[in-house]
Length: 104
Image 1 (tube, rainbow, N blue to C red):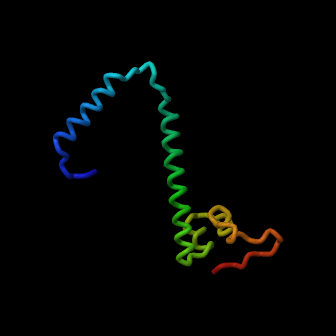
Image 2: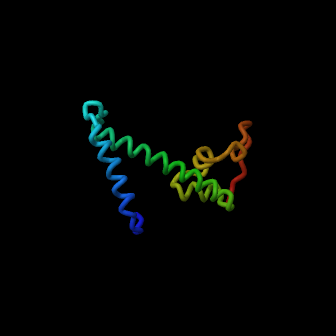
Image 3: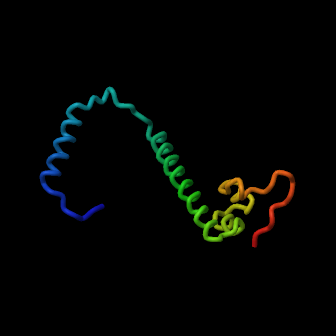
């Protein structure tokens, strides 16, 4: 939150906008959602944002030289799971049955 003071005109303008919105609000048109569903939706959005952040961080870690073994260790999963979840096609083992070199 900013500690800078906002001009009184800006505050009054925003208050007027909100007053108009509240005066025109019709609660019968509002979409009510049970609290449990609202909390689930909010948690799902947070999870999606976190998953994106983890994916970006994995990409940065790989670009910085981190091995899939180390990434899996940090994420609490195995090397293979980390590679399959976050790796690009070039990071995936060949489908012909040849083993991917072990990274140390």
